[in-house]
Image (tube, rainbow, N blue to C red; front, side, top):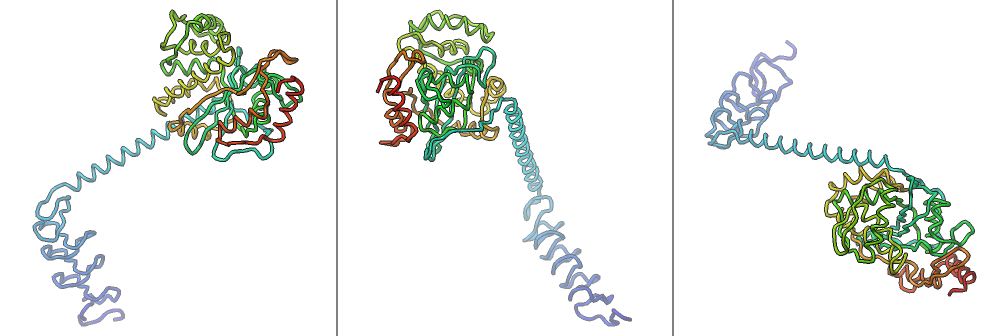
Length: 418
């Protein structure tokens, strides 16, 4: 009969199937042979002998645990059957479940932040001006504008009371803040030389960024604009900040509280005394607006940077999870060119950022009543820009661009101040 042998040959199935391997004997298990699905040495009835158990390692003995080597199918070990493996599997499942929960929470947080980011007013800057050959690798410069907005005007139509350049050293995490005095007499990039603050009213953030780049040899491509309400909300969500209020500042702060409350609709409580104390959001905003004490507008920019530093430090202490409520509340009061991805990146890096120093610009100046009004006139703009680049980037002996030199010469010609 084709495919069979009448006699039992060594190594063949007595029924004569040639597709088996040598040594296979389905009826005579005690002999060394092959199980049709397993490896050599499998003996399904004679467990006491070392061999292969189904799907296990050599030495598996499901009934005779005392033999060596052997495996307890319930998770024990040779000579001591038990349920250790089951316990390990349960722990493993719990561990995986915990990881899954963490991943879901992270994803939920990410989706929440992105959803809030999409609520923010994003403005794409289309025509950014940067002087030829300008740019310092390893630094990111962002313009911060605080607008005197009564009606939520974040894109123009109002002056920028606050103009700050935030320069981030991406290697060290150090951040330096430079306030450009709002009344500084500069090229407004539209053919006019006027106060820096007026750029925002006439051309929004884009013209203001271009003004900073053209006059200061910077390469800013992004900005963030906030109004009164953003500062108030940030401070209140942090539980207040601590400020040292002088006697001279006290009366002006309480005076500004009245108008700021009228503009924002936020209730206030006047401060009863000077000294180091915790203030609310509206009290901090009123403090930022003081400009009629000794030091005038120059001192006001110091107050603004102080409040910004206090907010930054307290937000860092809370960590990224503590900042999430601030994100949700503040976004309606913010306008920016930064994308959602960029904002998330900055937020995650913020934990290692440190505000290393702050100052005002120009370094050397004089007040003068000229055709543009009461202005802060740089005493040689080119020399001030050289100082600025050394301060921000450590560029000793920086040579200003031809554009800056021409602006500097024109300011001297028009004002007679050099």
